[in-house]
Structure formats: structure tokens, C-alpha cells
Image (cartoon, rainbow, N blue to C red):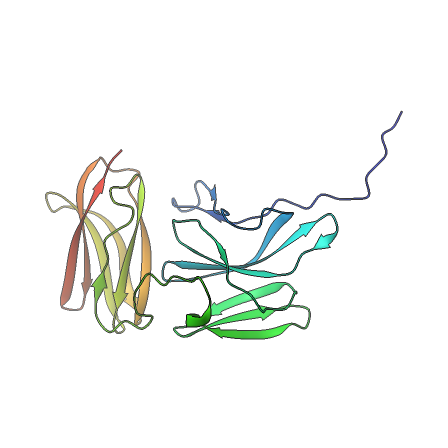
Length: 217
């Protein structure tokens, strides 16, 4: 006897995913996003090491209100920081050094909030408009096989970030380009390197800063 066909179509799987090897492999990056329904990520934006996502969720009775969440790269712990936004789909997110702009579809318009008022957003304890050259300790450290390096550039300059082995040989160039004033993050993937101590050096104009990192496999 034929089975009855349900009128309810299950929503497609959703969520956010992260790759640290240029798209070769992917892992879920949705810890802390809503557990009900199926989260549909509509927009993503990054400022320094902080990640912002606009999403909605679809269950059996339709769409739930739109939500604005924030997290930190490589820490995968999301917080709902979009209280006050209309219950319509978020179509775009843009950030500058002082504000967050969120575009809402279906006649929702454009919304703005000062970054300082977006509850729960962690900007790594650094100034949004850096006044000096800074190179942070990589995290995690020790690491395997990838780690994140944060740095700050006080004005538009030619920026070079290079990793060396313990005898001073260059093993990887992470950055070699002109960059404007701001805070930056780069992921160092050491999958093809042996365990040991390495050094990374940030060179901006005539100034340079070096730090040590450790790869443990």
C-alpha cells in the first residue's frame, strides 16, 4: 500500500563552514548558531579577526526572524548581537572603523549601529584605527597545522610578512602587498612543514618586528 506523501518539505541543510587550506577541506563553523530549524546564512563579513553573519532559520512552519550574529576567527563561539533589527532577511553586511551597516531585504531598508554598541563583539582588544605598528603573538601556539597571525598597520604602506625556519631560511611568504591603515589577520598553514621552532617577521617600510612560533605534529 503506498505511503502518504507529506506536505512538509524539509529545509535544506545550512550553516557556516571554514577552510584553513584554501578550500581543500571544510569544517562546520556553526557552534552557537540557533539549533532549531535549519540556519540559512545570508551574508558574512569580517573585520580583523571578528566575523559577522546574517542568517535566518526555516522550520516546518516557515521562516523565523532574521538574526545578526558575531564570532571570532578560529574560536567558533557565536553570539546574537542583532537585537532591534526587523524580522526580515539580512541581505548584506558592511563594516568600517566605526559602524556596522546591515542591509535588510523585503523593504527592510539599511540599518546602522556603532561598533561599540554591538553587544558581545570582541575586537581583539586593539584600536579600530591603529596608530602604531603592531605584531601579535600567533594563536594557537603551539599549533598544528594552522595558526592565525594578527597585525596592525598605522598608515598605507608596503607590507611583508614572512616565516623563517630556525636557521634563517624563508619557508613561506604570507603577505607581500600594499595595505591601508587597519588591523589584519592571516592564517599560516604549515601542513607541509616539519615540527619545530619558526619565526615570523613583519616588515613595513623601514620598520620590522619578529616573533617566534612552534609547530607540533
